[in-house]
Image (tube, rainbow, N blue to C red; front, side, top):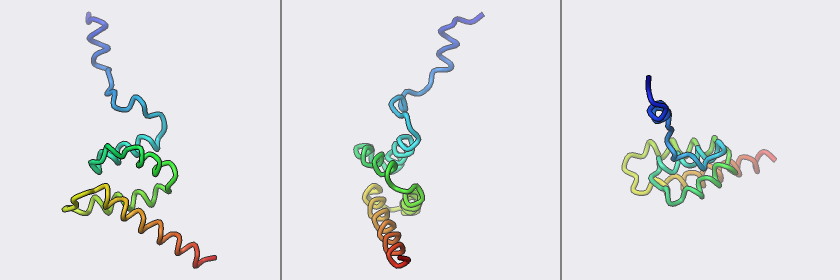
Amino acid sequence: MQKIGDIVAKFKTDDTDKYVSREFQKYAYDLAIELDDLSHKSLYMRLAKNTPRGLMESARGFVKDAVNARSKGKLFMWRLKQLKENVTIKNASVS
């Protein structure tokens, strides 16, 4: 027989996500960790909520490929801005 406390201790989860209730919040938090930019996690949450995920994934992949980036967060934002401008130009030319 085991003590109940020992059994519960095995199933205890990590409390880092206890305030995350939506998928986009989890994505943004993981992105902030990946970019080493936790101080701006609320910015990434707003972006994840309002920006198409494909654009964010493209910018994320661009940053992943950049080995010698000094500031991954700045590089991500720069690339995301470029991608958004390209989408805007394509939509304007179609109309």
